Image 1: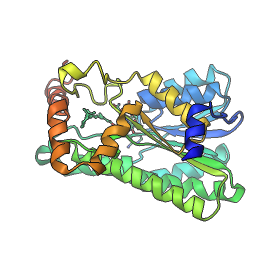
Image 2: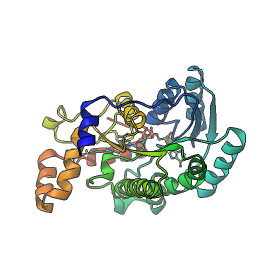
Image 3: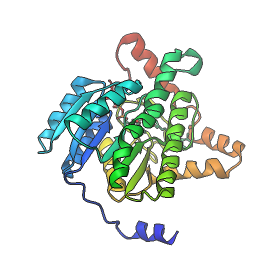
Length: 297
Ligand SMILES: NC(=O)C1=CN([C@@H]2O[C@H](COP(=O)(O)OP(=O)(O)OC[C@H]3O[C@@H](n4cnc5c(N)ncnc54)[C@H](OP(=O)(O)O)[C@@H]3O)[C@@H](O)[C@H]2O)C=CC1
Ligand SMILES: CC1=C(/C=C/C(C)=C/C=C/C(C)=C/C=O)C(C)(C)CCC1
């Protein structure tokens, strides 16, 4: 506890990652692209994985302009063999990855009973199962050198839940459990040179949860996060080798009260803050998008 207090009060030393090889999944997306650019600014060479080739190439182009080596791969993270085959290619064509940022994520955005099974399954495959295959592919080499870092971009919804995003909450609670168990394993085996960081943001203004909102009066108090701010806070935590970060810090409160308060008290708080129905406008948005082919505000 004392060490945690000292680390909070004093500015922690940030590690140098110049020349390290960093793999980022979902690097064609909003947060993935910003992670790529922040890691590039720190001098890390990049391996970029995304299913969206065009968006990924755009990220690669932006990162190359910062003077680092970048290799982009098109991969479907919902397919185990696609992950293993691409990992083999990375090892043969680029080298050994020492920083792994598991950032790619999806959400069905439909009510459970209206949602095709495949869409629910995809959320678990991309947000949770892929963590197993990525770790199995890249941890062995990190273990041989006792050096590396595995970052899991989960969510505040991996620490507490809300209504109508069962697929997403299940996958992100899974990601949090995976991260914690892996961290304990590395510590128990004294692989103390391999660090882990869990990133748990609240709504980020990237469009992924467009429309998701809490009670109007409270929106000023807990506004959606700026994507760059989210990534910069995450970077600080990663470079400080911090085990976990909630963004904003306020998100530690529902995480703690979930365990501390009786269920009914949590339900009352959700109702009061508009946390109970926050996903309904988001789901409406997805519905409109599916009907019209574009998102309406
Ligand atoms: N935005 C938010 O409010 C929050 C997001 N997060 C988490 O942050 C992470 C990044 O989110 P964000 O940047 O907003 O999302 P984006 O949708 O902008 O980026 C996700 C990227 O992952 C790609 N991707 C999706 N499925 C696959 C797949 N099967 N194989 C390979 N790549 C895939 C997407 O491609 P395509 O676009 O083609 O689908 C996209 O480029 C996610 O894990 C998300 O859960 C956490 C908290 C809040
Ligand atoms: C449930 C709940 C809240 C709302 C949380 C929301 C709206 C979270 C959205 C997170 C997202 C979209 C994460 C994506 O990964 C409050 C008001 C904070 C506190 C009361 C309980």
